[in-house]
Each structure stands twice: as structure tokens, then as C-alpha cells.
Length: 170
Image (cartoon, rainbow, N blue to C red; front, side, top):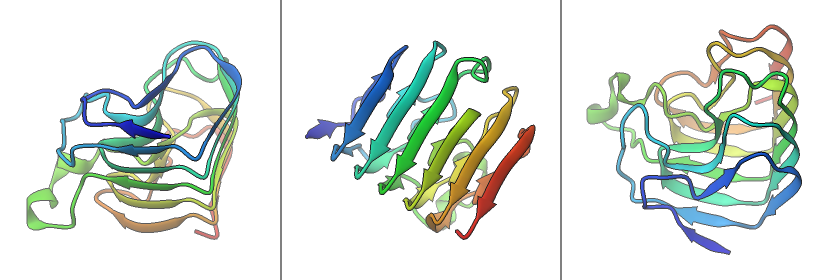
């Protein structure tokens, strides 16, 4: 399925759903950075109970974010997320214009909580390619065997992890 992601909002919003599989979706944005508080994402998780979601074999390009959460109360409500086999491309080109803090909050995969994992993905053109989140607990979160082609800030933003968070073989 093809989703027009150029509407300055999330292509897919998961809001309180559990046992969901998103597979073989394509979302293309407008390749314009919409600022720090944009909701232009491939998949956006809101601040409600969400468990056991799988996102696999999808493609997104030209969006501010890839797969992200924007909550600070997620640890008790966000677990069992599997993100694998995807190619997620942001809208931050490798240019002098974006050699600043303009990209810092544009995350490719931001998955705090517990028991979440992202592997075998490709990330290109985001600020932080993979991350957990400020003000939110993160435990048993794993990022492995991902190809990180280009980041505007950190390849991994793990400053806010609590325990058992790993980044390896990327």
C-alpha cells in the first residue's frame, strides 16, 4: 500500500492498538524539514497503551521521522515492538545547510519502553538514527544489525536508557 506522507502529519498513527502488523507499506513525504515539533512521521505512537506491534518490510522516504514515540509515560504502556527489514529515509540531506542543530530531533527509530527491538533496517538522513527518549524509561531495548548510512546528529542516542539497552553489530 502507498501512503502520501506529505501532509505534515504521520502516515500511520498507532493509538492504543495491540497485536498489529504493518507490512509492505510505502510512505513518501515532501522532503521538507518541518521543524522540531513536527508530527510528520512514517509511524507515530501516541501516549496510550500499545503492545506487540510489528513493523516489517516497509519503506519510507522524505519524512521528518521514521518509527517514533512522542510520549514521556511509555515504559508501562509501550512494549513488544519489533521493527525489522525496513528502509527508512529521512528528509535531511548531507549538505552544509543541514550541518547544524536543525536535524538533531529527527529520529529514524525512537523506541523507549521495554522489550522493544529494531534490527536489519536501513536508516539514512535522520538526526539520531536510532534512539530512546528523554524523560522516558528504556529497558530491554535492542538495536542490532542495522545499516546506518548517514546521521545528522547521533547514530545512537542512548542518554536516557535505564538498563539492558544494547546497540551492537550495526
